[in-house]
Structures are given as C-alpha cells and as structure tokens.
Image 1 (spheres, rainbow, N blue to C red):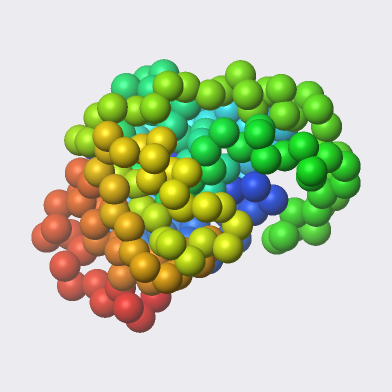
Image 2 (image 1 turned 180 degrees about the vertical axis):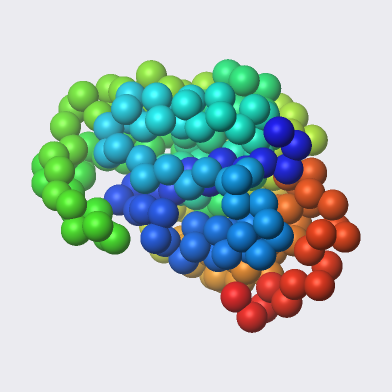
Length: 202
C-alpha cells in the first residue's frame, strides 16, 4: 500500500509516546489512519519482530519509521524485505549496551514491569545486519544532543545512507512535528494532501 507507515517505538516506550501520537494525529487528519500501524511492542525481540512482520503483511510495503531500539528493528526488517526506512536516533548494536541493564525494567508509559534477560540480549544480537548501503532507501535523523545514545555510532554505521544531523536536540528528537512533512513525502504521500496542515501546531 503506497503511503502506508509502520511506526516502531523504542525500548520501554509505547504508542502513547509523543512522536507516535503526533504521527497518528496527522494521519488521522489526512484520512489515512488505515494506512498507519503503531503496534504496542512486546518487550522480547522475537515477539516484537513477529508483531512487526504481521503489520508489514497487513500494510503491504510500508515505510518503516523506527525510533531508538525501533530503528534497530526497522533496519533488520528493511534489509529483510527491501523496504524503505526512516530512522530517528537509532540504536546501533543495542545488545552490546544492555549488559548493564539486565534485571527488572519498567515501561515508561504503561508502568508494566518485566525482566530483561540474557535471552533478550541474544535475540537482539541475532537481528544484526551489515551496515545498509542505500541512500535512497534509508533516511537517518540524528540529533547531536541525544543523551541516551552517542549519535556518532549511528553516523558511522549509516554513513552510506541519507543522514540528517541536527545540532542539539535530545533522544526524544526535538522538533519532530515540523519534520513530519518530510516523512510523509518519503512515504510516498503527495504534498497536496498535507500542505494545508500547520505542523508546528501539533
């Protein structure tokens, strides 16, 4: 389905996150809600990938929009299916960072608690792919002020892709709403559909 989008939230995040909410609001205003999926991902990577594979099957060939850990999932799926991906402060090799995080975790939005185990880390490692090489299929949006992930890791890993690096910002990606027009365009949605929307008012 041309113009469809699959939004993939990050670690301990949810569809209630600000970026997911803003994207959902815009797609609803455009009358395109049926072309958007924002699944509430299971904390285990194998379960989450299964959910995302199902969403891809429903949407056809969606643009994958992945934030943080969602960017890692999006990269794996984009390489597996030859899809376009837009990555927002994506995690690179997250399994290498999780050793210090084993144990009880809490979802920031649902208050659900769960245990991060070595099996989670192993499952994440299994999803790693060689660095993507297609600047037409990948846009990578980075902000240098990301307090959670070092943006330079993504800058290096995705160096063959279309990088958009902004000074400042944070891990949540400041100014996301104003960039939504660029996302819709990348998804193949015509500018005539959204040019009347004031994205700054979201």
